[in-house]
Image (cartoon, rainbow, N blue to C red; front, side, top):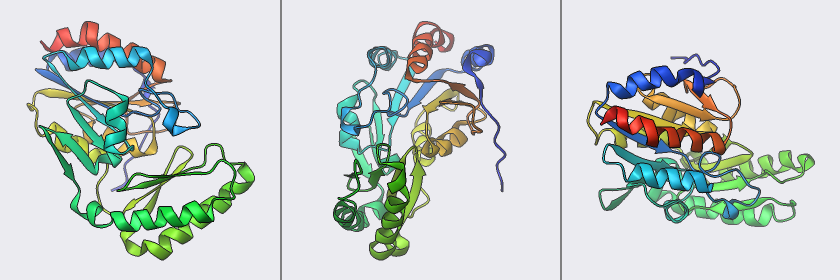
Length: 269
């Protein structure tokens, strides 16, 4: 079935509907992407940190009894947990790793194919070494080829060599997924952020409203998972999306999270 997408509305236009949705709920499940959502996108992924306002807002919401907070990121689980404190649930590697209730679950097929991801990343470290500013990130279960700072003339070479390496050493076991100036390499399994959010939501009351905020192509499955009963908020421009609403940047995410803390939590209590 083809899903028709339309440009998300500005979030400010949706606040009356959001108020009504929260008033009908008995709790809030807040799921947040990290890069481009809590933290501005930067050339060096190792330098990414949440804005101070986002850090404070997440900590405040995580302490609210009516709110369950989760971070759902493409970063490795250990990486993203070090970058933002407070949430009770973390999903890393696009949901292939899930930390909740004191345990960490890893997708079994992803675990089995981790050696192939490692092999592909090693090959790309060599084959792309001559490309200026191209960075290979081995996240164990997945790998990322960062092309944000690669000269435009070299981008096609990066994409070609990445495809050749995945075809040769991954075969049908691995796939390449697009993102914002990145190529994601991971197991070819029907699992992503959307499935992780559905799993997280299954642990809360059916009367809980689920809000998901993210900025990238990989967040679209999560928007589909929460809409239309929940609220999807896309960070960025007005390109078509499965999210109903949008904000421009992490600074606007902070403003929305602050509103949730000051007003939204009172509506569900």
